Image (cartoon, rainbow over all chains, first blue to last red; front, side):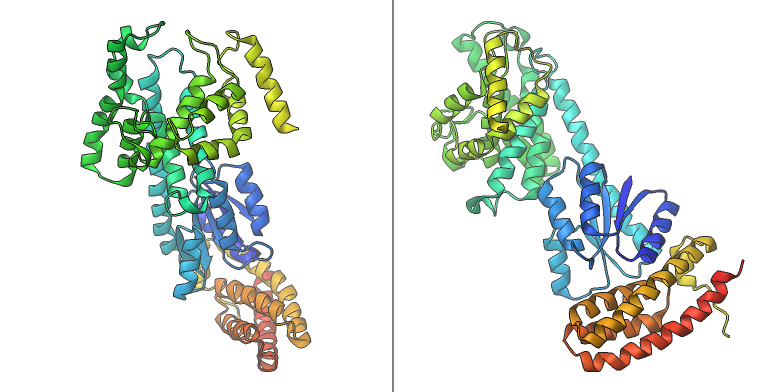
Length: 354
Length: 114
């Protein structure tokens, strides 16, 4: 694991570096918070151990910035401090720190706290495995391409935007954002239970075939039911909600249960917009890729009907990010079906950048 | 002159490697030259905020190398500076300078050998 240690006191930094290297870690150092933040953005540090008091940017402020940045991989953050007051510990945790280490550090205490960091990292390995399984489930569908990568990026962006809004601050925290990134790729795992002649049919589905296709939400939820029962943690419940409700409509005319408004879990309402945007802007055998503008107009027209108005508003606030994600992750998908769509796309990107 | 003994606590933090301990002590010595001078200057000029910051760093660095008397003095100065008590901090600062000068001499005997 790559570790970054941050301290403006060089002798303390050298000591900690030596100890961590003796424990087998790959260590980098920084002497102030700003330098550390730049390094964290540039490299994949999974663990940061930072002094509290530093000039310019102290440890808690560094931690806060790291958490706000919502990097792809989780950064386990330990604050190194001689502070012992309860108010200080609360302030550190509030800034997003995962653990504390007293100064001067005890090597054995450091070792056991590092084990906790390793356990958290192993949970991230779980997320990678989940994504791999989701990709496997989607592999029958030839048109998927980087669909799952885009879905999780779109969902992340929508959740991040909602987290900035006062009415969602109690609901959409860093944990929600992280979890939706990890679980949104699972939204269509139920399609493994849909017969090929329906799933891969190039033409329009009949009414009966559509009813079968709709069951993928229930199949997916049943698949996760065992996990939810085994470990009814928020993670598995969240995943089940994404799978079960991403086709529900805000006006209650969706499926499988016809839930309406806030009866639909927020994660389902978010993935609904992400999924539809990707479907509209991706070429399929039966349609060309729509331009961003066209997809935007369709989603806006369904604000309050198919889609949660707040989630649509979040989408409208982050259109430029959606365009960038699409540009970055849609290279493998051909615009040959609609060359004009490609030209309009480039224009939209240029307008956003300008 | 008292011969400097490598503190067990520092040795443990340096994974038992004396050469690393020497490197840490060398860096400590260099940083302390700067920080002690700065602390005196800040306390004398009444810049309590900066005095607090430097005292905090001296406290942590000294604790790391098990120079506990210096660390304790720095901790007391830090608290006084945080409360704006320049007059009370001044004599403690002189004590810290004396303690550092004695410690520095002992360290020099170690760092200059081998």
